Image (cartoon, rainbow over all chains, first blue to last red; front, side):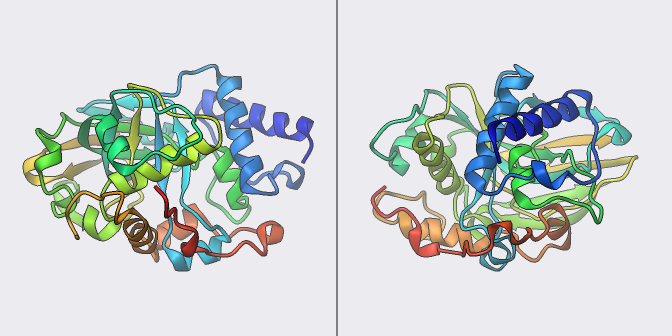
Length: 259
Length: 54
C-alpha cells in the first residue's frame, strides 16, 4: 500500500468522522495490508482532522477471537471526543454505536516515547484519577456483508467514539478496583455484569501495555488524556429511546440516553 | 494476586490473564470486529510474547 493510498484512506476516514457518517465496505486498494500500516494511517487521520487527541481506547479479544481476527495483540485507537453525564445523543446520528462499561484513567503526566519500557508502577503513578464510565464506540463502516478487514477498523481508531466519564473514584489505589462488580443497565434493567478482575485483570494491565506500545511506536501519551481501558461487561446494540447506565456500585457510575 | 494492583514482578502473568479473559464470544463483538481476510494470514496468537522485562 503506497503512500498515496494511505493518504487516500486517511482522508476518507477523516471525512467520514468529521461528517459523522458511515460507508458500506472499502475498496480493496485502500485496505491496509498489516497492523503497522493501519496504525500509520490512524496517525494520518489525526493530522487530517487537526483535532486534539483527548484520549485512547483499548480493546483486546480473547485468544480464540484473536486467532479468528489473525491478530496477536490487543488493539487501540485515538479518541477525539469526551463527555460527562448526563449525556443525550441522537441514535440516528451515531455510527453503529455500542456503549461499553469501562474504567477510564486520566494521566497526570506525559508518558513520552523512550528506550526503556515503562513499568506498571510508573504507569500507575502517572494516573491522576480513575473514573467509572462508558466508552461509546462507533464505526465508520456499516456493519453489513461488505464490512472491511480488521486493519481498516484499526485505521479508523479501532472503532473509537466518545468517552463518557463520571466523577473520579476516591482514593482509587486503595480500593478493590478489580473486584468491584460493574453492571450495564438498559432502561433500568440489568443486562450485563462483569468485573475488571474477570475481564481484564486490572485496568493498570492494559494501560501499561498501551503506554509501552505508544512509546515503542514513537507516539507517547500526554498529561490530561483519558484512556478507556476495555469493556468489563460485553456489548449491547442500543436503540433510540433507550437509557444506559454503567453502575459501579460505591465507585459511582454514568448514565446516557439515545434519543 | 488476583484483585491486587499488578506489579513489575507479576506483570507478564497479569498481562497474559488480560489477553485471555477479554469478552470473547460475544456475537456483537464478532460483528464489530469480524474475521479479517487472508491479508494477515500467517500472523498467529502469541501470548508468550507478553512483555517480561517490564
